[in-house]
Length: 355
Image 1: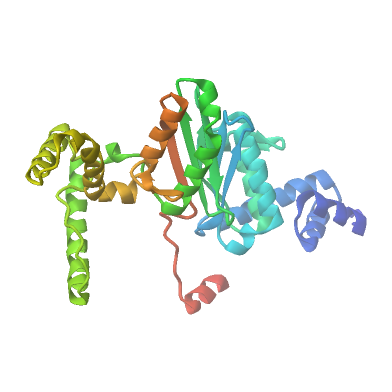
Image 2: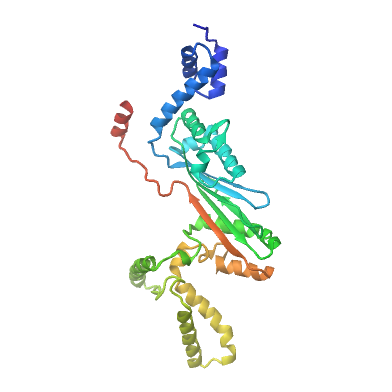
């Protein structure tokens, strides 16, 4: 049997990041052949990784990479089992290499990522080696890749704790105008990270969703009004509508006619009606789009100018530029959303580890 020197063990450890005793055992088993020892550890690592694969990974990080000229962006969620490992240098390096790979090849799905090549091997195999080294199950959960057309840009934002990330792309009629909107777009991404809009706009809602949400919202407001009444405070308005989906042209026209009748009753001169009615219509729309304000990006009031919705902010910017800004993509990732964490009591956990 070949002599296994400390220097050889050190070399194998540096190559594989495996434990010292594991490296020594691998060299003993392969009679000091370091290439075979690497393969031996890899196989052992894969075996360990397979055992870890059934453990739920709900921690981790959201990673984001945007090209300097805003013509390409990628965002991905990589999950680990614990927040502790998410702060590990090895995990951070894995995230960086994965993000760079996705960005350089414009990869848009986890399936395509797993079939890509990194460090001379398929990414799927590479990930398993990293799982073995780091010691926890790691999952690339989802990927978003955006390449806007030549008259558009994409920008994004990831919160400092790496738990929330947003990508938004826009287009303009004039490509130069799109590039001048990069800072505004980043601010809107920051808004979305904080305010959690689920969809871009009301067009994502169907009639059944609106019906259910209206029942729930009215019940919620009625409950709040009971408490406000008890406290002697002004009651909240129970809206007739809750989304722009319901505000058809006929509904808006009817409301405008009602406002005109009211102004007439008040004796307001007709010459000033057109100055009063737009503001009153905006208030009517605001009072009757509460679900849009909760769930849609364009329907929410901008955190940096709470008198205007995101849609109105973009309309104002369009007027400034004499252009027409349109949002193409809105993607928001929140770490671990939708993942059910496995809950075990301490006794069960100890028993599971002793099997």
